[in-house]
Amino acid sequence: MGNHNNISVANLISSFRLATSSSIPMIGAEKAITEPNRMAISYLIAAFGDEAPFLSFPSIARFESKLKRLLAISRSPIFSPCTSGMGRFFDAVGGLIELCDVAPSRAKGPCT
Image (cartoon, rainbow, N blue to C red; front, side, top):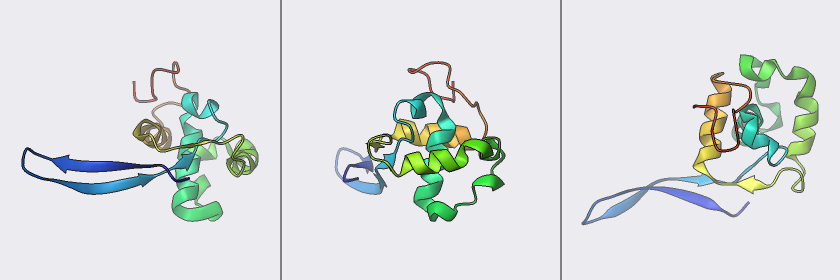
């Protein structure tokens, strides 16, 4: 989990780092690309730990029957490789606000 993305602001004279994003596990590897709720769960774990308020989000509560299994998968680096891409962050946001449960294709995020 050593990869980071910097979010910077720059002009021709100066620049500064506004924020840094950390690596987050992609629960189920490539499945997380087409199922944005998996990334949402991963970001909730990063923010709150295993006691995250998963069921308070209707988009996650719909997957209550799979939640225990997804939490177990999230702990496995083999089945949940890390990503620091901002695209996966926006997938997570899309999953939390219920834009869609399944992305239409690999190249399209939940926001399209």
